[in-house]
Length: 558
Image (cartoon, rainbow, N blue to C red; front, side):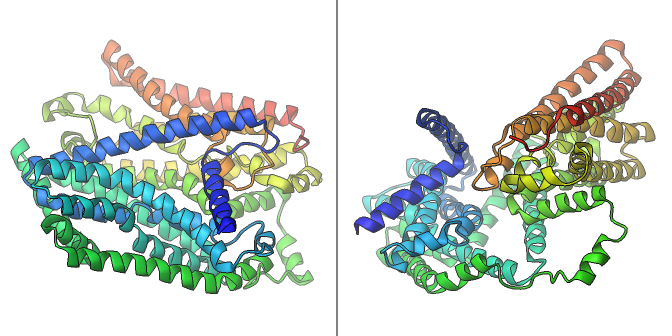
């Protein structure tokens, strides 16, 4: 029992540290400070999400849909940890860096798996509590409550995510097995996940757009009410255990809730038993890197080498790295999709309808105002693409991602300009192509003129190029080769923050400056000139930064 408790403690600490990693060799005080700051940020984000969910519950009460809240809470709580479990299963449950050391411990395999699986369940329960507790508080403040119902509601918080998270762990296991045995499974996984996130994004804004086109606030309220009511019924129909728990909470009936609790615990225990039986095979495959691999015969190597320059080969390496690390791909590819989605949305719905519908949070513009400022509003579209391009900064942390293999790139017989240029081109080329496609869609649909289409490409690429070269310089000046997981440099590194936050500041600040200039001079042409001039200037500045980087950088010597 002491060994199991120690394993659980190690796993919890590892999970907490993964959310706020520190470089190896850092002082204890520095690590403690970083973890404390991460805890404060996590608490603040949790409080913000809880407040937002509570406001959603109050909205349902205002629409007379109080009885929908328990079903909504149970479904949200059930789904809260699915994505987290799917992303964390590999590396936490299987695919361990120290698998041989773990299995040599004098502890049973079931205890090892239970400690690692328990950490995933614990994180899911915490997320579930953040989403479910505020909804239940709102519900019991506006509905008759009895002690049995309250007890069932409290118990449902840790029980709700158990079955869905178990299913997510099985899905992660299946994807991992395919990744080992099937050469292109990683690409399929990334494509399907990005498609899923895109559908959620488009669906949410499509729902807002359809409800926002109602003629008056009462009609909008009725539209949202009917959607929420149908959603509550549909979700409980798709996930019957939520309906069982909901019946127990509303009516205080013990039998349905006991069935729900037995189902949730049974699925979790079955997950533990199945995973501990499959633990050795999956980790054995991952450790041996078995499955379908390229057979690099001398003939095939000669075929690959023929006609391929070092620059092209390094670009291909960067593309393979991008699609080979799912978290890297998710962080850096969604910006490309967002650019195309924005272009299609503006073309299909029209800017006037989009702005007057209320789908853009905090933007309430009348139809008359849109008609009066139509020529100026079009000039602001390129600044939207400035924001989107900075959401795909794959080159920003590409040097640090070399990791412990950085010495290979430092010994290749090519100048630093070739290595750094390949990393930059692998990011800049897709960004330029996506900008051109988006601009073409908007120009062909008539939502933007030819001049505005040119501004989208020039301004979007110019600001992106400047920020990405600055971020690459920051990464080259202080690379982090000692990371344990790619998330340390993909999600929380300084180069990524420079690009993302710099892009946000540039988009909002530049858009505001452009609008003020047009308002002061009374002509949209002033905004067009500013967009084109800034785009060219930023691109030129980015090229100077890159040249300076190439001359001053001694690759990977630190």
